[in-house]
Structure formats: C-alpha cells, structure tokens
Length: 104
Image (cartoon, rainbow, N blue to C red; front, side, top):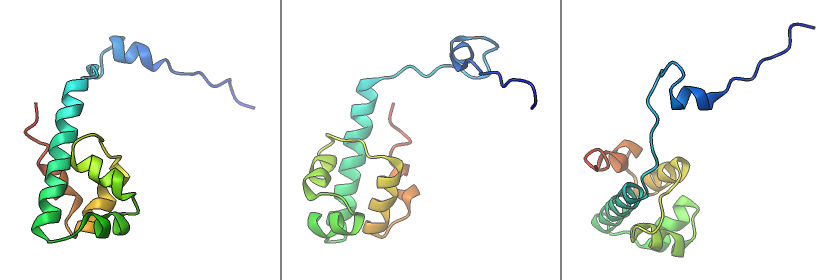
C-alpha cells in the first residue's frame, strides 16, 4: 500500500493560497440577466422556425411548462438541456450560447 492520500483544500486556492485563479463571486442579478437573454433567444429561434413549444419540448425531453418558463427567463438550463434544446431547434449549441457573450 502506498502513502496515504492527501486531500487538497480547494478553498485555500480560491481564497488566495497561491492564487492560480481568481474567485468568481456569485451574482444573482447576472444569473437572471443570463436566464432572460437565453430564454428570449430560444423563443426567437423557435418562432423563426415556426415550431411550437410542445414540439420543441417533446424533442428536447422537457416539460412544456418548464420550456415556457425558461423562455420567460425564470430558469437557467443545465448545459445538457441547452444542448438538447439546440438539437430540438436544429441549431448548434454554440449558436444558442453565443448571444450570452455580451452580457455583463
């Protein structure tokens, strides 16, 4: 058996122990802006392609009411759901996420 494994304390890295990267402070207001922008973009793409919420929700394996709330900016999707939505809308995931580049 080898030497005992040491657990790394990631908190010290985040707070400043050597500072390999700066901590990102949660910003609920930015999260809301991202959710609203992403949802609006999903709705815009869906309407441009003349798709219903039901058809997109079925293809993305998500509840219609969740999709409606996501389009209204009430939810931020997981990365997996964003990819499924992109496929359901027949666009590249990067196209859905590109609109988020300018959010501050």
